[in-house]
Length: 501
Image (cartoon, rainbow, N blue to C red; front, side):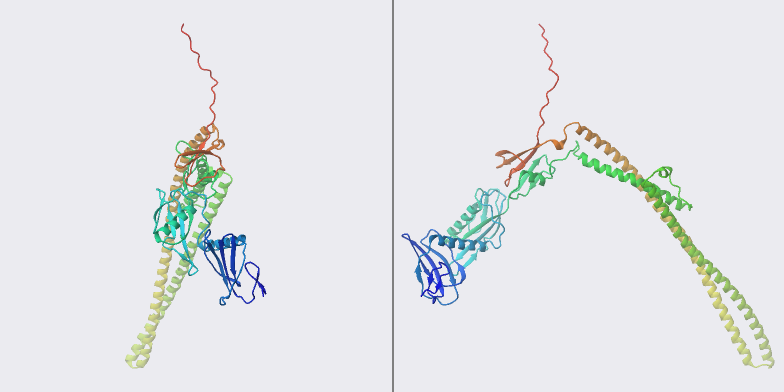
């Protein structure tokens, strides 16, 4: 009769049954269960632990409900199945939440919390989310939070689980529910810590679980660097100023070489007259001089090519005007011959020796020659105009070059004056910082002096000497001090009092 085994208790069951219900009844030391068959878990119900009845689960294949039989289920199995239900509900409630809150942490002012409230509706088998209450809350300086429907709750001193229980009980009282809704409280942001004393950047820093004294000092930039009386970090400033001085020492020879090259270009010199101190220098200065010579030659050649191109164009146009002048002279002779011939034909035509058509033909020939001469004269004028434009372009090119060279020369001169002033100031600062380092080097090195750590907790009520590995708590104030060196005993004996007796 029992062809198959039950999916829950693994005991024989009738093969004809296709629906399973599990109920556990506690009474007089005996446990009962009503069983059926099934393979898919549809939903989990709530657990009323400590009451007379625990609704554990419901599995179904979707077939109509069939009769059930009774058998015993061990109490250990029921506890494990109840734990499975609780884990399933916790997983559902934490779908949209981050890591769980630290249950050992006692809430402090300025703690940011995320509250999620869920209610199990047994009649529908679903969870109801209290969206009005869900969200982030901040514990006020007075140690309270304000929750809709409940009002003000005391949060300081409670753990997240205790506060969640208070929220559930408060909702139960205000709404008249038979059972308190499930509330979850998660710590989103802890109160900040404060680092003060001998650190580079004292101030407020965010707390994270597992924060140690050493990590907090690292957040604050490490131990404070050596500074002089003006608050300057003498070592860092000395390195920076030394780098600036080195850059100035490199830029000054470059500016001097550029100024010499620009002066040579402005005076149309064939070569650059560099200062003697540059010619005597070695290394990078030699490379700078070679670079300026290359620039000088390249610019001179480019300028010469432009002038030569304009000069060639001017010569070509001049030759063109000469040819046009010769053509005009030849055309004038032809016009004179044609005019003389026309006069002779006109005289013969008046005597009737030749026809009028001959005279008209000569007039047309003379008019064509005169028109051609006018074209030649116009071409000659255009060539002369282009010659003038070419000469103007050459003059303009020379003027622009001189203007650019003068402008660059003035800019280089101004930069040199600024570099000289900057070099003088940097040298003075280096002398000052060097003296400060010298004064500090007479004593013990700052980096060799150990640090002393003190944790101030509970708003100054507790002062705890600590080490680098000590754990900090939210709201702590970490005080970092230098360990005072031992007092030196004077080798000079105190003066003895002289008796006047």
